[in-house]
Amino acid sequence: MGKTSEEDWGCFLHYLPYSEEDEKLGMVCTTVGSTKVKPHTIYPPRKNEHPALFRQVAEGRILPEFQLIYIAEGQGTFSAEDRTYTVVPGSFLLILPGMRHQYKPVYEIGWYEYWVGFKGEFFSKLMREGILSYDRVFFDMGLHDYIIAAFSRIFDEVRAQQPLYQLNTCAWVFFLIAEMLSHERRKEQPNYYQKIVEKAKCLMELNIYRDVNLSGISEQIGISTSRLNEIFKTYTSMTPYQYYIDRKIHKAESLLEQDDTSVKEVAFQLGFEDQYYFSRLFKNKTGVAPSGWKKFVFNE
Image: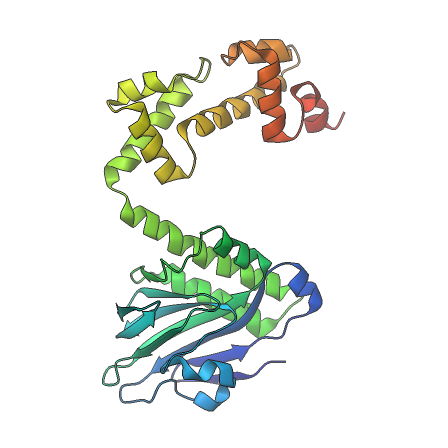
């Protein structure tokens, strides 16, 4: 079992055990905690309760794992990759493996912090793909009760340590990562991006039975096709064409489930002049050929 420390003044500290079975899942949680650092307190408090690798957070350290730190109260500083950030309530700090960093509260003010450490191939892949990046390690999330509630759920899993608690814990870690990244994307993009994307999606649905005509959709919105592509992909991570095809294939699934429809008829209804091109798209998207969709769905 790991080491636990809880006090009325708001400290929860735990370094977690994990098995080979946990590691095979590609994600493990290594440490969780929360600390209320009072003003005029040397940081980190209870320093000797942390393994030696973790103690030099105020002076500077490098970790072999990921960490997320959420500040709910107080003020401080965070330095990483030759940049220094002012930490305020609602700040989210992302620590990446191999990244030299340091953070601490203002001595006269203190702060209240929540943290979770994690590692594994799943998270390493997010880093390799650039989803988690050295270029984005400080996030101005703002104060949200659902963030603190997510940390509380992680703490509950750790306290109970029921079977597969590591998997449940990491699911909440991924929730925090997703919220952090999506909040940043929403913040970076003007509101009119959303309006353009929603209007394009609506026009695609209205024209679901016609051939793909992105230039016509762009014209109705009042922007160029290239601009539509740029905005749509920035906002959704998909091109308009990819989204349009995805909606057509989804509609095709419903049409193919009707007893009296053939593959050729469905392809024609959805604006595909080439039945075989439609069939290739359908199989690439669903993993099943259109002719076999009924058998797959109804287990015939």
